Length: 380
Image (cartoon, rainbow, N blue to C red; front, side, top):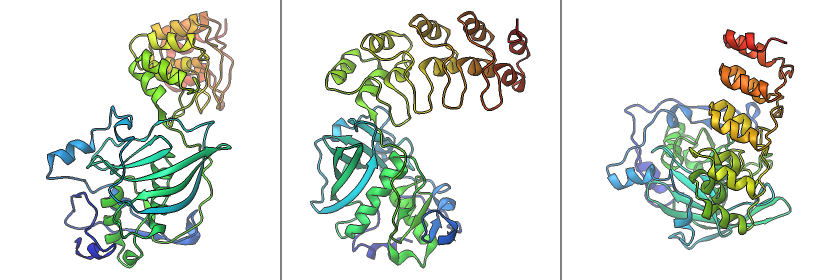
């Protein structure tokens, strides 16, 4: 199976193992005039979404799923084994700054890369080996993060410079920005699409949904590049000392993470409200907005945690705030059918008459079959 792959870059095939099915699924091409990239694209999902990754080495298997608590700091000083350097010119929008932290953390064997940002470098870590294979030098200014050079290699020292640049762009877009984007694969495999799909699975894992051997011009993504910052991680862990340290280093208290949430949203991952109280005392807006316009009160209402709801209301949370779609906290409580939270929000002045996408809180409750909530929401 991998015999033909050995010559593609003059070296062995990708450095991790992949379980190969007895029959490789058929894959198909999407013509250039039928996709947004204007080049022929191979739909590799029949392979990458069905083939399972395995390893005979228990250490590799453990490494692959070891990133749950990883902030990337352990890799910050590491250098790629390969000393090759490639010039690059890749740009991505950012939200004020690109904070140190996690761009992508793998959580299954089928995720082959971890991405972190530290000390002006994007670190591309082979998840199974926990080794930095390549790093990108980043310069941030004028609302953009610009990758100016890449050190190391993703597959082999003999890979073409253009392949290295295209791979870096693919990893940032598909893993960090979470957009569908074609993975690169060697042109020699264009005539063997099933082999190409298996190659993509070996190198990029299940994150590869489509692929192409062709160069193409891609517009800059509208999504800003954001990390799960060290401040967010400290908030989620309830580490007030670390949070204070990161705030003093200059990280904005309302900075949004890759998931679009602010540190105050993340603080409520804790069972108590000590971290949330600390952030509010340090100036975090109690109604700080997520990328979708959701306040912490809205997200906590969805979770149904009454004491945290009371905490936010006691700190002045706007019970009638609306998100970018027009939904309120009352909409969320009504949809969940939580009559105690609905009653609390009404007692605190929540309005029944807000309409979002044609739905009031009452009509949303009715749609979900929560008759007791519908009754409570009837006009006085």
